[in-house]
Image 1: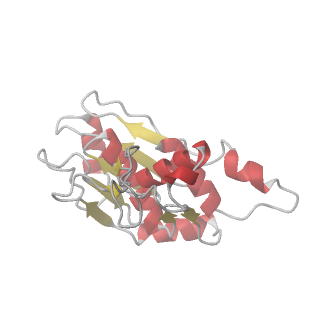
Image 2: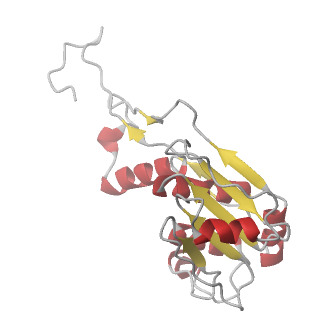
Length: 219
């Protein structure tokens, strides 16, 4: 999740200078990007931010009331009304909370997977569109514009409610169906499902058809 957030923040930032390799820009984000720190849960691991960073993004998994991570967030003067997820939160529930100045963003999930969902929710709030066939990225913006967008975000929670299984069931019987996908396309679609906060993929074909005999190779 940290690598994904770092990569997308790089793509959303200022456009590369003339002569820069844009493919390298997309595939190899440089180390000068904001460090993404992972706050520990019950073990209370906390890494201090670097003084040189413009903004700080924290990824927080399950937090206990007596953890150092929870105390750090609760005492932060810029996180008004910080509250972790309740103990009975669902396994996919998550919270995104940004500071008033946009220089601190917290992605907090009830589980490691929910924390990853929080990262993608944050990116959506910055204008990234996730589709089954790929991503839709807004035009690059200066770092200051991204910080302003974060400052306007505030606090938002997401929960699937009782819908714990979300996904797709593509049909093999159509020309654009999975029969025509290669290995890379399978990987792409499954990766995109995670970004869309989906966790299921099924494969459908018809056992009988009014226009054909019964098929014995039904999956």
